[in-house]
Length: 116
Image 1 (cartoon, rainbow, N blue to C red):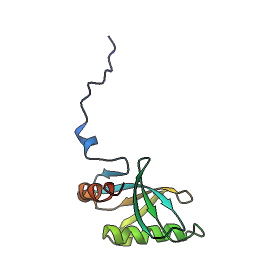
Image 2: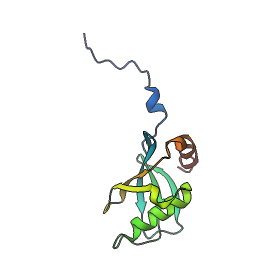
Image 3: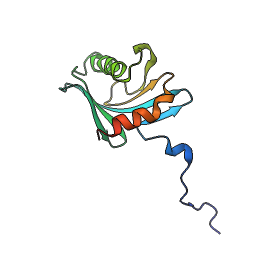
Image 4: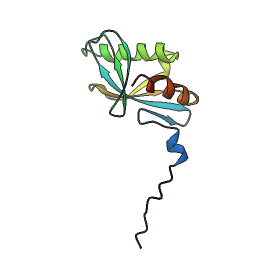
């Protein structure tokens, strides 16, 4: 009778993704929550489906966004040019695309989820 029943079986593709880190073809989409004017800088852990990142720069004239990108490039060991701010130019919640990094999904999930 009720056509759309949940069988309880998980979608295998969904198992390889976390809310804060998703593979999009060859790229990764990171969902972040930024804490500007914070010390020390770095990854804080998970909160509400996003990876929290502390940056020392103030959210003035794009300084916090630029510092975030520098920090991500260093932490992920990727060139700064491979990072694209997709959403959240003026928000604490940001989505950042990491070009050609999908193969690192499992590594990043283990590395940063452990901090939550």
